[in-house]
Length: 369
Image 1 (cartoon, helix red, strand yellow):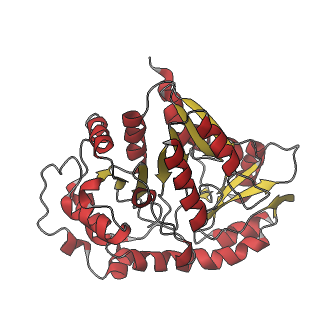
Image 2 (cartoon, one colour):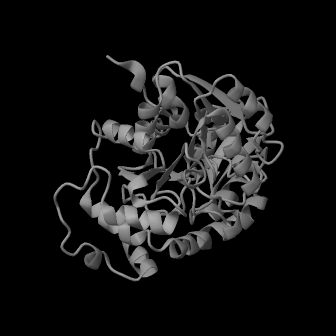
């Protein structure tokens, strides 16, 4: 049996609570839309969107209408033919890694990290290195360390801004400098941009990496930044035709193509990014004000950097002697809320991922302090 697909740590930890009636407080997306709420937000009904949908197979690269919507409303220069859709962002990531990398290629990833970003290339036999973001300095990225790794022959650098689980981001200048560094050392740059659209102020939204760099790859999804996980549509944008063709070849072994129903709805919903963002910020911003009240978890003191993007934070635990995994279980038992400990994010920094895009966040704060 091939053991390369062992259960991911996050799934394993969640499974250990199976059957318990817990409220998730580790989510990285805002409270999902209901159908009625979404229809009101975009000003049309699902019935009208799904009128006379072609129920044959969608094109492998994705429905043209959806790719045109993405090109027009979510990118500055990326054309529809430089976009490809997937059954969620994780399929896109899997296809990109398998199209771009071979065993022993050097891959650089920032941590704390969403485990598949690191584990997929590890499973392929790549040489994966980690740069820890600096939790004492607003989760900053050390560019000197990045360049040192590039000098050693890095093939791919993987970033994720807005960042999961810290809520960190780069400045526009930092992203520009990073692109120039990648160009200088001929490094591919894979940007997991699934939380794009959750910036608390418009000026903090970064340009996409695919728009910014000829060897840049941007991955997006409707479930996270737009809070619609029930529509299983993700996408990849890249200017490089050769890579796009290779990615499509890998996709041929997986979903092949998306559901026409999902793609039709997504092609219309994603024409209203400002409406979706306005609704999501109506949940995020009041809860952001409550983060300052969250100074401890069951009498254990924590430190939180208040983010400018996203709706999750990494609460650093001051007590070095307690197990974060054990404390997460204690919080679940005493409060009924589930948060994720730091060991699930491939980091040496102790803490917890806590989401604040849910309606129950104020109840969670009261239960923990």
